[in-house]
Image: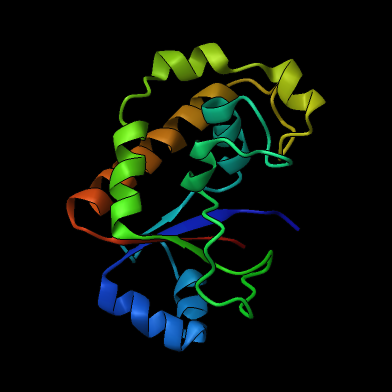
Length: 163
């Protein structure tokens, strides 16, 4: 089974509805991200991107950029999208995170790409020696950056989940 990440941009009212009934959120996460412009599918790139941002994998990572995917604030503690509950960032946290993300260049990320170290740390999905893999990560990072840009500009909450 693969571990993929989706992120969702929502208004405060939508967020409150999902807190009251998280099954609605689960249904939205499992909907087609191609038809839902507020939903972004990051495939299996998430831990690779996390490594490029922090120099670490998920395990024992306390870097502030971990919040890009994992805020440690659950929408509903009893919800399970497949690998645990959905997590969220408030609209203010989204703005702060985007301000930091927007300072990071592709050149910096490229310089941090270290396939040997990523393999040593068992960064999921452990395909870091494949040709074109850096392009894969950068393409998804740019989608992620655009997603956070939109969320910050529209005062939206970001909800993340591993499916």
